[in-house]
Length: 325
Image (cartoon, rainbow, N blue to C red; front, side, top):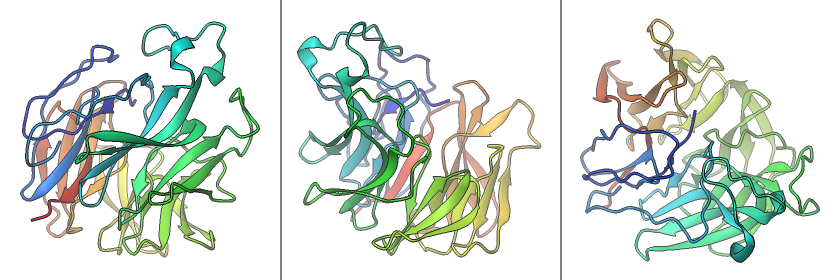
């Protein structure tokens, strides 16, 4: 269940949004020389001070929200936003339903929003029926996401294959749709290889590696929520039961279980994908009570196999980058 709104949290108290569908715990944590990103009720964090990322004018909360992304140096956030096409005429019932009598689905558009933590300003890209989770390229110049295209479908009705992977070039603002990627899940994690030459996405119940430029695809394994190691040697992912975290080599070999929730009682599931430490030696795993909003975050040291509980009944962690010295 994903009913949060974005936060950047920085060594401070959490701000809650009055429109949130559920209450949240407020426990979070920090790591040395790091910038951490946590999920919550329109919440945001950095290591230098307290900051809440403002919602843009007309912003509409989404019941099942795609994942935000923190840029590689922690100076930007990318997030799927739903905005009115005509703010003066877009009147809807309260969150989370957002029914718009007489206006139809075309009263709203989805965009990829990029917020500069330095300039304190949003920029918006595209005009879609739906925008999915974001992933920055390792050099921070591009963002990958699923976008359901509005072109030729102004009312945003169902059109098979219109939900394609897109690559946004932040310098030019150009959007490149990637062929043969229809059917991407829009709330799942996706991830770049550290050399920027490939992307790992979920597609047709599988983890698929896509070569940038040629767009050649290779099925790696079955699963969801791929997360590429900063060293490039492993891809973390979840199996479809939502209770088993795996690692696999990018060539599809060496699959192994690294964390298993199945022996635990109480119906615990993994929430979203795994978050790597900047050195590629640890994983942060969000554990969610089934049909609940309690989250525990576990740190797994892949070198020693040791696990540490980093928070209980708090906020899920969604990003971890090294702070620039």
